[in-house]
Image (cartoon, rainbow, N blue to C red; front, side, top):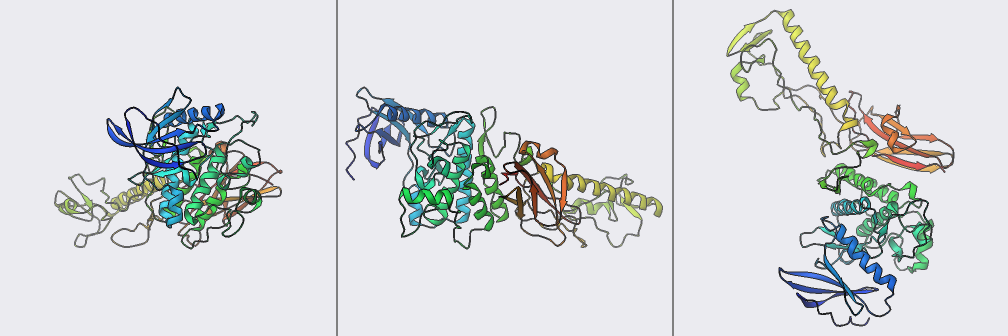
Length: 514
């Protein structure tokens, strides 16, 4: 490989060293003098540059500048076309190595891959909402800041999303190992779902250290890879620490049929977040643009995730313990079966207990016991129990429709005084789908399964109509929807417990029958 040409003189910048060279541009490290900081400068090569490539270079600068505020997209400070036909753009500097180099040197943990995937999906979703398709997502195009945050770069072949009726006659470059079959075989110039494919292929690469269809020691030329990408099932990572749910999500992301993939980067990211929850990992927030153009952390601005529900809405939690007060107690701090002084020192979560030493049917108020009849006490206790049951039903029963994924360590909620659990909220299931002749088969799995668990299933013709679909109760974690070939079927499922608690609905899954 020949050395890059001498770096250009750029006012206000001092050249330090070359950083790399690509097909049509060289990258150099410069020091900006005011304010003083390192910057990366991408310089368009002179040899063999066509007007189309020059235009592409300008489009890249404009595209990255439009997305520059996103924390996971490399920021462009300025660009310029020079009088002699050259061009350059000045970008934020990310120290090497990029993710492709790191993947060769080290083993990425599942936790880091999930976190990086969610952060990159945030960037990709933001680009998509701006109408921009990246079209070249791969490990080499993900830089890493000195603080460990990824930065998506190289929007050189990015383009505006094409409507379904437009001709796909634009000639674009392609990175074969991470590209979907519809781009490789000329059926599409890229859309939201093709970026989802490349994002999934990138995460698979980080887990394994090579692209998904590369064969160690085999022929991995573009001509050998393309038939594998088109026809070979996505291979498993082969890592024992990679959960089955992540294997399945990556396979879904790289489905041959674009309709079988997650239909947005946001949906793909929600799947990654669900796996974080399943693995008891800290939840990585999403950063996307809402409809008003404001970046908000972990907010679904499209009206919600699965079924139009925002999985990150404020969650109403069932209480871990109840320190109930009798409506008959007129003194401050009166509690059932305990002196008023005890109320001031009881810790939250102490539960409803009966204190020994107080006669049955007494209520302490202002430090003095007040006797009531047994019949009145039973009535009061009944009212309290009904109120608590109603509160739990409200907080738990509606959770499948309005709350996010449960906490990473759900457990039975037991009063301090002993007894059985108040509620054990099921986890959000991971929904899978496969197309068969004349039907779509949905299957799902979830952690911490209990004997007697059953499932509430919603099935509709589109994701938008799922919230209004009738609920079907099934006992096994599978359901087959029989429909004409080519018909799209969407579904969501929630887990219910025999005690009456229902967990959150899964992300929606849509697939066309074979």
